[in-house]
Length: 82
Image (cartoon, rainbow, N blue to C red; front, side):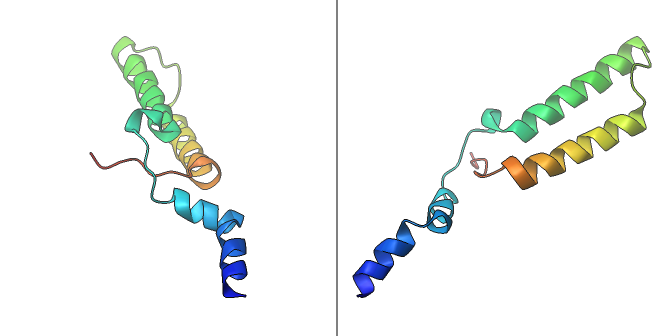
């Protein structure tokens, strides 16, 4: 009876999610890293060329909101410590 129960638990979504917890991905596969890189490039280009394309306060707000959304709903695998 214990063997049947352990098989059932190991195939549950929670068990699969926990097993993925120990897998890691390369930094360049992280959506969060790419969003931050793109927003930083927008800020640097805006600063260098004095375009006043976007207000810095809004850029910081966008970065924070996107990071929270990505971390809560899309992050499943941690980045590898290399």
